[in-house]
Image 1: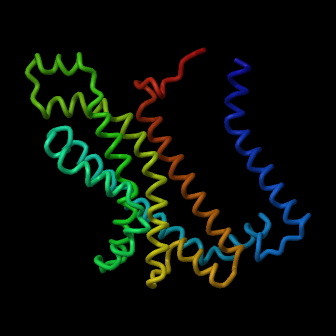
Image 2 (image 1 turned 30 degrees about the vertical axis):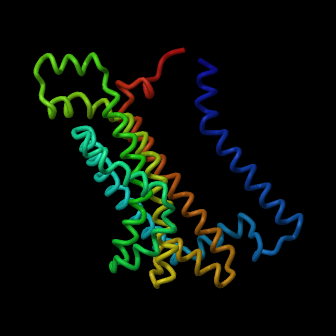
Image 3 (image 1 turned 90 degrees about the horizontal axis):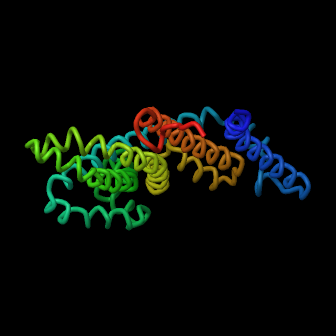
Length: 265
């Protein structure tokens, strides 16, 4: 019992302690070697800049978050929809899966300039770039989950005359839920990366509202503390997305799936 309580406290305490040690070391290195703030600002200066420039960085963070969440929503619809189509039609999978792989393995940095040439609406271009990065983990994991149905249950449904849609809704989709949620957690971080990369590319064309553009703008002015403050905001957004998606996964699986059920040791 005591060991379990210590592990529970340590799960939260150890990351905080490691972060505090890292920040103290960072601050001491800057102080000991007298590193100027335009090369490496101290953590305190980054925090001051974050508060001072919040009027600039706060709205930019909201824009980046909005693009990320919209891209993630589109990735969920597209990834799950294609996975269901692949499970229903082997011919559809053989036809379209290679295109999904090509999109996944091609760096979005290389595709983004072409997208912004052909897509006039900048918001649509940003969403498309973020979607390309985010949808494949959902597609791949959900497809795997739809195929990982227990063969005995599948045979049972077939014996009782269930049609394809009944097997999909009552058997395959529940079985694929843990796989989908695993892909969703990966896609959440990737959608943020896709949004930031897209903003970098579009930012040179005049879209100056996201955090990536604020980093570019700060680099042009050698405002290194603001660059670090924007990076901190991006990291916080990523952690927040991962935490929320992990919570959703835990709540959805905690009562029935082996990966989330807590057992007494």
